[in-house]
Structure formats: structure tokens, C-alpha cells
Image (cartoon, rainbow over all chains, first blue to last red):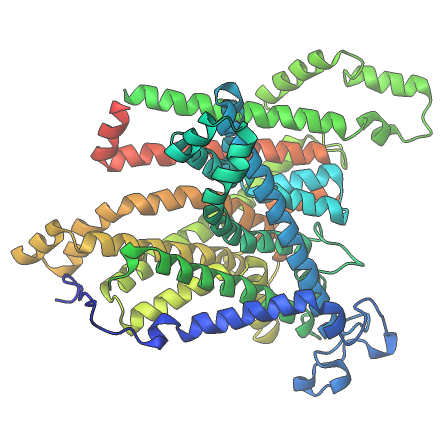
Length: 293
Length: 310
């Protein structure tokens, strides 16, 4: 029975191009590329300024609901062009996610190196903090920090930077401790290289691929976190915009102008889904144990 | 020793709570003088001095810290800054709403997820499997605030079938519970499927089949309990998501629970209330994880042996 004896694909069976690059993966890749282009060229692509209000053009429908091409995706309650706002919202959301994930990765990696280098109580203290952070949902920590420090844009990126540092710290610490005992590290130490030189030039390049994979895993999480907090009105606040903030503000107009809320919602959904489909696909390709079946 | 295993777990849990409490104490002190916020800038020095004495703010910092630890150990989290009620009673009033919604959503997610996961595993690589797995990907990629708004748009505004705010009746609970539960159903379906696929190929299941054990009994009696360990691990890991999810879902559907209380407290920067919720949620999370650990040893004798050794 196929259920109990999974058919194994032989080495000689050629793999079709379609199996190597499924349509869904290609579509996700195209969508992520689109998001990158919008992020980079928002100011060129947006037909209007995202803050320009026009009270005679309020709540105009998008072109597919009988609107005009002047406002392709309609306008919101203050007459601002939804397409332009969407484009800038993508830029702000991606900016926060990039900034937050980078800060988290740098802090975590540094603390991981410190823990592996000093061992003893330094390691205990750092790992303890990692445990505390892991034991709480980050949403709660972020809300507490926002309650404490308020909601400026720069501070919000820093708060997002606290997300996921503990994963980087654990990863780095583990790999560095095992690398320290390996021949290449011992050899450089024996040659008289200072510790930072060993870490930066010899060990970091060896663990970079692991860290990059973790970066791509954290990125969509930070996007979700930012959009959730902005949706609650506690993340990115007007006059700046973000996908979550548009969705939260558009909620009040669901009856009369659903597109204000639904379009940014679709953008968040498609972005996080594309990244997770791509991530799964890359992981499956890198993991030889998942190849059969 | 099994007892020692739990003792270490409990000590670590207490240590975690102590660190969080210490952080909130530091944060409270950094967030500015509560007396200034209370009396305003028109108050005379005598009034300020009176309140400083009343709140114990005139004492040295280490005494304040010990007093803070003491009051938290007694369950006294101070007064909410915005309406001067004890933070604990505000939370106690909101808690039943959160528990009702959370339990309902979690059960829906668990049952639906495990059921779909088993169906997918038994029909591996067939259309049903693909359909279930697409649902799973959809379930955890749809942010819950967006799913909630889609459901409100369709079921409350368009078809006018279900109410969209509050939690007065069971009808009110349907949309928020589905919103919160879909995410869990997606995750559980995925993990149940892979855990089931792993055990369905094991020799004891093949042996049961050879003996002529009927398929439902084989799946539910021989395979499922052995697939339970990874599923329970995920349940433990997902409790945090349940807390974070209910913060959002309660706000979307105007359910007067702890999540919405927290969002309102953060919006009005009522840090006294925020710290009370933070500490109480962390205690709950640590207890819940301890419970998951106990369940492990109850259902799996191998775990008991492994923990007794370490």
C-alpha cells in the first residue's frame, strides 16, 4: 500500500522543471520582488503625495467599482489617494521590519558572542534574559515598552528590534562554543590572534548562513507585529502610515468604503504568505531528509 | 529524580517572575513621578509632600523596592492611574470574558486542527490533503485582525447574520472565536499531519493492520497517542500566541476582556495597570508551561524515565 510503502523516486528519474519551481513558489517570488520594488521606488511610483487631502474627493470608489483612473484604488475618508497611501504604507512597514530585524540580529549575535567568550556568570545572565524573553509573548513586552516610552517612530523601530534577539543569541552562542574547540579556531589562537579577530574573521563567516536564514524567518514576524500594533493605533501613527495603520483607520468605513481597509489587509496577507511559502520551499530544498515522497 | 526536575522548573519560573517584577519596578521609577501625574503642576509643596509620604516615595529606593515586592506577593498591584480603582479588580472583572473567548477559540482550533491533520495524513498527497494543507497555510498567514475584519464585513455587514461587537450571547462569540481559532487550527493541522505521517509508518501500526484491527481503532488508538507528544509541545508553544491573539481579537470585536483593557491602558499610558497585566500574564504563562510539562510525563512513560535520569 502506498500509505505504508512510500514510493521512492530513483536517482535516474528526471525531475521536471515544474516540480523544481512550483507555480506557487514562482508567484510568491514575483510578489516579494514587487514589494521590494515598491519599497525602493515608492516616491517614483506613487501618483500623489500620501498626505494630500482633498475634501471634495472623499471616499471615491476604486476603478473596478466604477471609479475613475485618476484614483485607481479610490480615496479614503479625507480624500487621500489610496494607491499612493498603500505604496508608502508598504515602504514604512518594510522599513520598520528591516530595521527591527537588523537591530535584533545584531544585538542577539553580539550577546551570543559575549556569552560564548566569557562563559561563567556573563553567559548565565545573558541566557537567563533570553529565557525570560522567550517565556512571554513579545506583543506583551512591546506594549509595555510603548506604554513606558511613548510612540515616536524611531523609538518604535528600536522596540521592534527587541524582537527575536534571544534566538540569535542562542544560535550564535551554541555555534561559537563548538567552533572554539575546532582546529581552525585553535590554530589562529595559537598563532597569537586576539579573540575579536578570531570571532570576526574566522568564526562569523562560518555561521553567517545560519544567521541569514534566521533573519528571513524573523522578518515576516516583525511585519505581523508592526501591523498588529499599528492596527491597534499604538505602532506607526498618523501622519505617517503603515499597512496596519491604514487597516485600523479604514475599519470605521467598512460599510461605505470597504476598500480602504481590505486593500492594505490583502497586502499584509500576501506579503507574509509569500515569504512563508518561499521559506518553506528553501528549507525543504536544503533538508535532504524531506526529499523522498 | 522526577521531583528534582520539577523543583528546577519551579525555581526557574520564580526567577523569571522576579526578573520581570524587577524590570517593572525600574520602569515605574523611570516613567516619572506618579505624584506629579496625580496632583498636577498647580499643587502646593505641602500637598506633594503629603502624597509622597502616603505612597512611600520619600523612602530610600531599596526600601521602596522591598515594599513593591511585598505588595506584589500579596496580590496588590496598586491603583490604576486613570480611574483610581485597584488594578486587580479591573483585571478580575475583565478576566471571565477573556477566558470564555480564549477557551472556546482554543478548543475550536484544537479539535478542527487535529481532525483535519489526521484526515490529511490518511490521504497523503491526494486532493483532500492538498486542500487541508492550503487551508492550514491560509489559516496561519491570515493576520487575525484582517480575518476578523473580513468576517465582520461578510457576516455582519453584508449578510447581517451575526453580531460584530461584544460577547453578550453565544452568537456574539462565534465570529471572535472563529477568528482566533483559525490560526490555531492551521498550525495544529500542519503538526498533526506530520506527526501522524511519522507514526503511521511505524511497525506497530503495520502489525495492528496485519492483525486485522479496523482502521478507525488503528488510527485513534494505536497511532494518535504516539503522535501526541509533538502536538502537546505545540500547544505549549502556542499559548503565547493565544494571549497575543486575544489582545487583537478583543479589540476588533469590542469584547471587554483583559486584552482590550491592556490596549486601553497602553493608549492612556496607565503604566500601573499595564504592569499588573504584564506580571499576571507572565505568572499564568509560566504555570501553563509547567502544566504542559506535567502532561508530558503523564502520557508518555519514556519522558518519565528520561526526566528521572537527568
